[in-house]
Length: 254
Image (cartoon, rainbow, N blue to C red; front, side):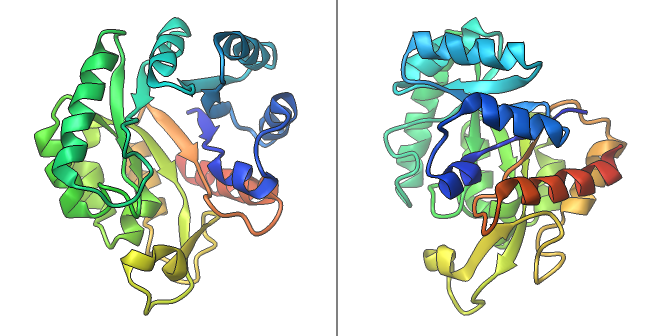
């Protein structure tokens, strides 16, 4: 089993990624196999970053550039198999789900020309937030795969185990995280006030995210795709949180 860091939370805590080699060195010491994404602003930078990964014996799962076409080209050239959906509305909050589906189909068709799969990342505050929205999207877009974020789905009151079982054959990666409830009275339209994400086992409401059960199911079914640990919000040194999470996950899966 290989474990990767989805390092959005690290970037938020540190203000960005300023030293790729240092970050890779630190996560390697914790037992991770690499980062989820190689990000760059030019082909030259992408190649240099890929060399850094290779030189350090680590890997990445996909790429992202300034433009979608860069991500397609780099991901294909480096022999990876999927790209995140990236439409004009991605990351811009709640929009028309039907518009998002239309744009996603166009994106996926373009990615297919490079031999790549397109994946949906379910996320609070996005077009695909709730379990019903996820079901609708997956029905309308059979050509698109799922990057299942169990924390965001649980945070939207979704049934993580049902979704895992239903779409198991279309899941290309999983984001593991736990949830800490800040204000139960806040609605999902103010989800940042309602909750934050934390290390595995760090929830004040254990069981909201059934991460242990998910891990047990994956182990039983000999899951062979990508395992990502992501903590969107770090309140302390991210490496301390990541160390706890990977150790707890490995205790179940290995």
